[in-house]
Image (cartoon, rainbow, N blue to C red):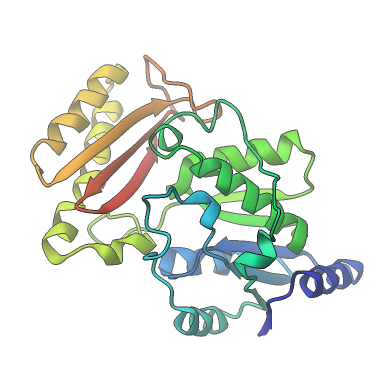
Length: 279
């Protein structure tokens, strides 16, 4: 596996690969890799000739009181996992390379960035869109692979690609879960044993709403109430929001239908977790 840190070297390398006719698949990550990340890499291998994975903990998507410094980092362990999967190239740029002194340019996808996690974490999604576009410009992938767990991010990235005429196919793959349903996340390792048990309330509440929908319930208000009621059974978990939205516009709906997304965020101690389902 080739490991590249320098941006110019990365750009020259992928330009050569494209000239050779190679289809480049790209999986951007912030490291602390789990089975969900590795699943994206496996899909990228199946759909590409050359797979690039990036590890970059992006300071632009963390607020001043968030966990940027504490965010889990394990470059040695992550490198071993990536090599084991059979990734071709690992890209590990420095913060100073991505955001050099005097950096002033940011990408904001209006409306889509102001709701859900955007309301709770001002500036977060601007930071996500900015770094993803920069990575696209550096890696020059034909296809980029993301997980559904970060649903709002995927909607924003797809819209950014569409609006800016970026020549990238954004592929969104199903959320990978633990046996008890908890969505795999790098932040899960923050959870203590009791917090870990309580965290299952996120998926349990979403599945209860899905069950009601499958039985014929269409009222978004009643589906939301069902989720809130289940969260009340776990007082150690603070529900931040429940959004029942159109999957393209992220606008709240009054009546759910096939394809409607139910997304939520919650805090367990100092840990913030998100999850969602598509009805």
